[in-house]
Image: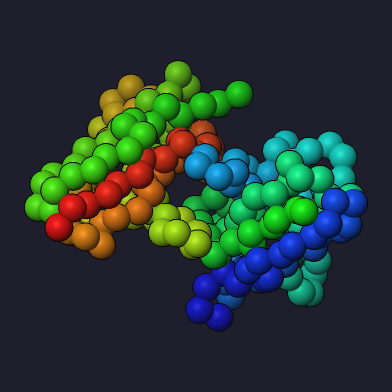
Length: 113
Length: 111
């Protein structure tokens, strides 16, 4: 596992559809973070998860957005009933211990048409 | 909410020149990080600072954690074309906590 793997790299959805973004952390990393980046802005924190637990979801919109990090498999960021304003780059990062040694993936660029 | 003010917004410099950018905050951070982001990629960590007053170098890059814990700067010496990209500062209040990012400095280099 060379790094944090995110897929798909690009995702196009029509308004009202669901978007599922996947993140496989680096080997040995059990802490996953999701960030959103709007064009020409910095990254904004969304959610911090450990295996099977949501630790901090203070940056998640209250509706339509959810995240999970199951015991087996990748972390999933799910956006239901997407709207144009959800168009952004979504980045996942992982770390071996809380908040230290973050490594970011290459991101998923979501376009809502 | 927490906010980092990063400046300048953009720089267009001659190859070989030195570059300086900084971040300030109204809140104290316990960790300051500097990242570089290339188009279509995720941020890559350049330098991490964990102690107030700390000065750390990584090749041509030097960064400092301000004594007040409310600011940090990044210097790049003798810039080269591959330094082009967007540089972000990020602060962390507690270990394990989220990162707060600045809006970025776009660096362009004329060769």
